[in-house]
Image 1 (cartoon, rainbow, N blue to C red):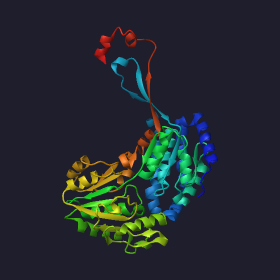
Image 2 (image 1 turned 30 degrees about the vertical axis):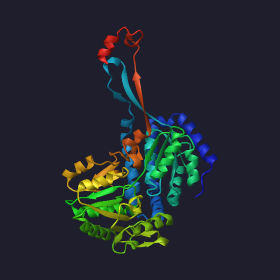
Image 3 (image 1 turned 90 degrees about the vertical axis):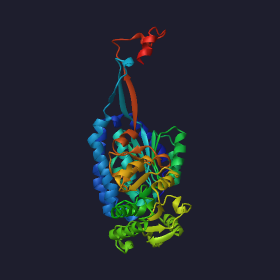
Image 4 (image 1 turned 120 degrees about the vertical axis):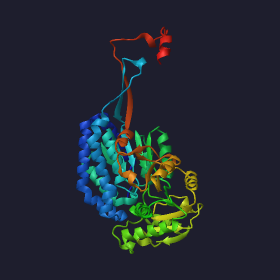
Length: 458
């Protein structure tokens, strides 16, 4: 896919700044109209989007709908339903020494947003932030990933047909386009990708003091305790690890299983995988493919880091790697240092829960954290750990609740979004004091005649 030229980027950015300066995007009616247009466009392009996701990642229509298209529909509906309430100026209490003034928080758009998406959920992760941008009243330049080129082209076609480029535009390309974009001054950058690239984005944004939302990743751990429901744990871990062939930023990256149940858990995860995809996984229409040959080779290199207990099949020509369970993995192995981002699941053991927590807490803060066990233990587990999000006795599902903020902490991200949090992330919360002129109390003026009184009340 060809890189967008600097002239095109400059012209689009300038046109969007001019359009934003017209104040049209600030109108709530305008925003609601754009959200409704957006939803109608997705309906129109639904089959094209799904077909492109099949071509790029071998995602079935069912998976494409559930993990990408429906999530954006839900986000749009949530914003349409609540935008007027969210955007209404918020009254705040006024301290006695400021009376009769009143305090308000005004929610105003930031300006022109840059939204850069990765390839693993190329539709959802570009369009979901766009919902928040429209809702908050911004203009936006969208940058899809070149690694899922078919989906990128369909999204560009849909956006061009639906919106004027001086309001929402799409630019294409690889690293050169990214470097051009990051050298420009935006009012906010919303980036989803790896922690390595997140650092590049943050460094570039610092040149202009541009605020950023960084949705990154890392190694999300999964603890399975001795008193867990193993049948349920295995099924939900297998599901969470095989959605999009494990190319999910919140997939369980590795499992820490209590020593007493480890072997049974491995057996049940293997059984759960075969229940979903059959014994001939490669022929299943529901099992996705690795994004490209480079990613395939990287993942295959991890297979030497331990003993393959299940799976291990791979075919570079088809970008296929079967769901694979690794045993006998050591903490120093590469598979335990890099974010796997594929269908390989290392399973380690622990004797005491404190040992599992110590291992997790010695590493970078993860984007997600999963615990399978009794609810009475879960509270302590959460108290003694940290992560961007978490599920107890499940995987991935916290991302599906638009009432929950989604994002990372530390190395796994900066800032959160989804639902109202998206609206807030892409808005400026402008603190405003409204002071009447019918009275002008002398308390604040030099030479502070009433200082003793002021001191008692503030």
